[in-house]
Image (cartoon, rainbow, N blue to C red; front, side, top):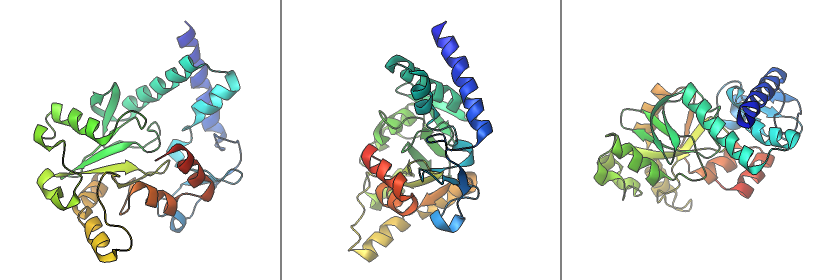
Length: 249
């Protein structure tokens, strides 16, 4: 009964937040960010007060924290919020499997119920597989799960972190750029440092066939030729980047 009431209250709270269209973190007014400011899609918004950025479909991200603050939700109930997000993600996307009880989403229409920094895999044909978790699931976990349902050969789930061999594996790992509708090159790849400009540029170009294919099937997202930390530094507001640094990638 307690969980049912919590779900109903949380649902009502989310509806109120969606109707207001203000910042789910601080309640401040939102303004549309010009595309040129961050390299994303049309309609992305930023709070004028706290500086955080949001996709229109993601305005309820972080509402759980505000809900907890408003209603005094316990750790147990906070865990329920995570499960609620997972259920919502399943409802809004095609689910092909699970990893550590979290859904694996295929070509999700939005990232409204996908946490910041979530890991994903792009196949050679452009399909994007994304796990609705960022705390407990790493790329290797996702790859093992994908191999169990026949999407990746079992002998390809390790040793893929050298981008020079990407054509041998037929997939590329990616990671969501914090709370933006964008994905960066997976953090595990051994990309040359910025001082090796030509080698670095050549390394990122190896991902182009995968990013181009993914963009055709997922035009609502941006695919960035950078790794998560560099992409976050380039694309997030200064306040969002501080949060990103404090909470990890």
